[in-house]
Each structure stands twice: as structure tokens, then as C-alpha cells.
Length: 318
Ligand code: NAD
Image (cartoon, rainbow, N blue to C red; front, top):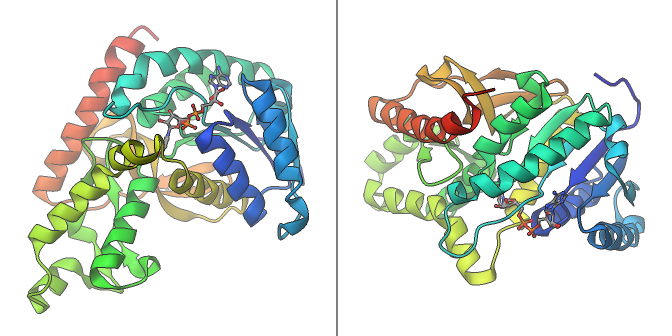
């Protein structure tokens, strides 16, 4: 891996998600350098100009420019947000074909630059495209990270926080599985300030599992609701991507629910899927394997199987 004393993030795809990610990176001064690359060169150029005009108001200046794939050579993290997004009512999995084609070209260009860092993938269906990036790049599996269920977990913690009237930072709960329709809540390991949710329900009749099941449906279907209202979702995922980038560049060893490669963990293998994992400067240090309930194990297996079914026709030859 590169040994530079200046951190560089290369962003591929400055659409709604990508440009919001760039804005989050600058506002939090997460990286020293940010290069923006997009098929639509004017969009990348305009974003770089616009962001540079806010630089004076950021905690630290981030050198920001629009560039080419050659700039990926010295990048520590390449974040891909390029590709088609969901139209109202469309599932993430419906985007497979379009975005696989786009990804092959993009990843080949990045690797041709001599890039030797960490890939962070946001484009949907994110678990499939993270797997594709691993295959197309030839880099070690731990250096390919998908945003996975980081956003779903963020939504879950926010909604649980609202329900129990507790700051989301004190809500410890995960959504795992596909970033999509088959994801699941890990109720068996959800707690508020150290008290399990099962215990909270027992203690207070105001709280019910029925409410919590509905809450999860709202988490799972949040993207459909937002897309219906404003056409796309981008601020939440952008902040989640910035969080992962910070964990990588600061060598944090933070536990985040990201899409990572399983080799027998959670009883499944050869799939990238959202689970809690320790993230640091080398990418994924290790997977956190939660002891799931019988029902959670079944749901997780189903989620992994759905992803594997999509991977099979696309990757069995490689
Ligand atoms: P968008 O249409 O606003 O932006 C896509 C950008 O990609 C455009 O600027 C376009 O010019 C660029 N692009 C397309 N092909 C390219 C190529 N070959 N090379 C370089 N750039 C290219 O879309 P968006 O709303 O920003 O969404 C981007 C992706 O992020 C979608 O797949 C969406 O589903 C996904 N997304 C993921 C999450 C998550 O949790 N992982 C959340 C929200 C959106």
C-alpha cells in the first residue's frame, strides 16, 4: 500500500450522492486532497469550483480539483458513486446490469493508473457491485468495502432514538444483510444505553414489539419513501460514506456495518454483504460475528442467498 503523508480521496461520480459526499468530506476536513472525476466533466469541474469557494469556512483546507483516472494512482481511497440510481418504485437489484457494465470500465481505468489503495463502493446494488469491484480489480478482499447497511443502521438508530426518546449515539443496534429488501434488524443485540430492547419492552407497556416491527419496515422502505418525495436519497449515505472514509484514514478500528466478503462467517461464503466489521487503514481488519437468534440466522441466510443468485450468472466464469 502507498506510503504518503498526505491523504487523497478520489471520488468517481459527482451526482447527488457523490457531490454530497464531497461536501461532507470538506466540512469535516477528513482528507487533505480530494479529486473529483465524472463522465460529465463539467459537473466535476463545477463541483470542484463550488467546493473550493467554501474552503475558507472549513475546519482545515482540503485541496480539491476535478481530475482524471491518472489521479487515482496516489489515492488512499477511491470512492465510487457513479452509475444509475433507482427510479420511483424500482428495486436496487433492478440496476444490476446497467451498473455492472459501467463498473467494469471504471475499475479497469482506476487499476490502470497504478492505484493500490482501498475501494469504497456506494453505487447500487451495492453488495453486488462491491463483489464486482473485488473481481475486476484483483485487489485483496479486505481492501474492497461497500457502504452495505451503514445507512440502514443509521436510519434504524435514528428511528429507535425517536421512539425511546434517546440520542441515536446511545442506541446500539444493527441492520445486517443485503442493502435492500431482504435486510434484517438484529433485535437480539439491540440495546439503549446498555439495556436490551427486549428488557425495555418488558419494563414499560408503552413500548411494544408491534411498534418496533413497524419501525423496521420504515427503515427498510425509507429509500422508496424519500425517492417518491424528492427523486433520490443522498445526504444520509454521503455522511455514512464520510464516516467510513474517516475510519480508514484515521486508522480507527471502528465497528461499522459495511459490505464485506464472507468466508464462512455467519454460515455463508463467497458473497459481499452488510455485517459489522472493524475498519482501519488496511480496510477490513476483521468481521464481528454476532450470535444471531434462530430466526435472524434464517433471514440472514435468505438475504445472502438472494445476492448469490444474482452473482452466479455474472461471475461463475471468472
Ligand atoms: P446521479 O445520477 O445523481 O449521479 C450519478 C453520476 O455518475 C452522474 O454524475 C454521472 O455523470 C456519473 N457517471 C455515470 N456513468 C459514469 C462513468 N462511466 N464514469 C464516471 N461517472 C459516471 O445518481 P445518485 O443519486 O448520485 O446515485 C448514485 C448511486 O448511488 C446510485 O446507484 C444509487 O442507487 C446509489 N445510492 C446508494 C446508496 C447506498 O446506501 N449505498 C444510497 C443512495 C444512493
